[in-house]
Image (cartoon, rainbow, N blue to C red):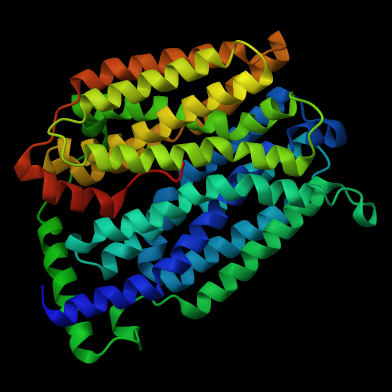
Length: 440
């Protein structure tokens, strides 16, 4: 790597990555804040547990339907226009949620939030492929995904603090929460419009030789990726490795989003806690997961086969969700924390396996398909939990389902093909450009 290229990469990481991380953090905050107002929506709007679960999940339907068109428009208009448009739009939808007055409006706005956010995460990943050569993209992706992990820590305390505004000027706390978080998203989106740079040629903070070196490096990588043949989605769905990987990832998202949307309700069962205290306690699984993810990745980076470690983490997730059906709410919080650690660590191990285990010819489209279908677990799990809570008075059935899904994923992991040395480097590069892990 030349000196001008190295300098250019460093400048991009220092100037653009902090803004992208902030945008991702706000993205996760606005996507998951609904988990803290379930009881308020039921009391003020009449949203039942089933309706809440359906509304929480409708986000992922809108997201899945418009993810690909959004990415196509990003390529046409550039990141500066399109990523900021996405952020401003979802901020406006969040503001509109403070005016919810019936279940239908709740459904519509959650769906529209998914439409508005569609394409942000893969669009940001695509943006990095337009600026960074493959050799540097892993570091940038790790920095970017750190924003998703950090969101799990700050979402609870921030949302809980805003809910403490309940009654100010006669307005419910959950309405304040949506209004202020939505306005903040719009402001960050507008600010991003002044700082994001769509093309290397437009970067005033790069010298001419740095621009030339970076353009050449990115062009070489694009040439390699362009040689990979296209594969139809039908053939990808029928590909055994893609099917196994999709099933395993679907099980992970079931657990991850169930925890996201139902953890605050579990914590509230402890009793005697303020909204801010509920928010603080809800950050415990995220903190533990971040520590475990870092330790796990450090420990397994040089492992010749990640499958045994993936199986262990999935078993931990299954044990955690099963134990959450037993004991007191405090014991349930500890069990859910264990499940969250297992689920997050499993995702950390899963994506490198998926990227390097697929044949290079199908790596990019295969991972995009895995990401799209697997994320539908975010629709299934909240709806399932809500339905079971309304019909049985308990979420235990949903927790048993999560345990079973994690154990089935262990079986799938057994048959996931290991990485091949010749595919690992190029396959990872192509895959990151198109898909990459979800922020959850």
